[in-house]
Image 1 (cartoon, helix red, strand yellow):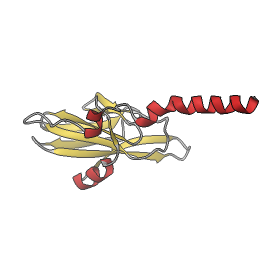
Image 2 (cartoon, one colour; image 1 turned 180 degrees about the horizontal axis):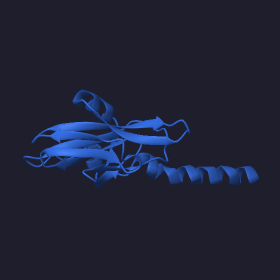
Image 3 (cartoon, one colour; image 1 turned 120 degrees about the vertical axis):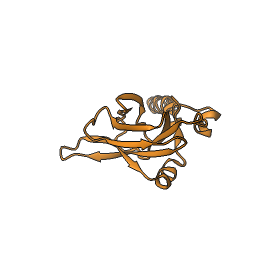
Image 4 (tube, helix red, strand yellow; image 1 turned 90 degrees about the vertical axis):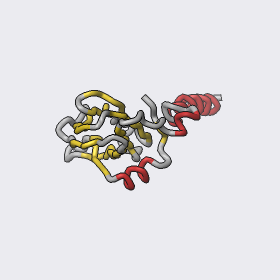
Length: 145
């Protein structure tokens, strides 16, 4: 009886994680990725390939505005007018980069996992070339905002 109860509790706990493990967007549209950007817009895509530090999911900012979160094994895109934008995470505002976006252009940022001397996990945005970004985001779950 006690063994059966343990298995039932374990099964219920695993079932409660199933929606989270599938990702926030489990419909066909999310699997297809983002819609095409508007004419004249530029696109900036963010992706996080690692499962390390699952609890570390900082908000990602573009020009000081929160545009998404660094969820493990997910990616998302934001469309902006052409211009120069500063990208950071809320948890690490000093680790940032600036990117120039032109109309019709897509750029990628990897959300990299790092650990400090005190074993504190951080997620930092890193601008990558398009080939690296396309490869890094392939196979990840798309998250629409």
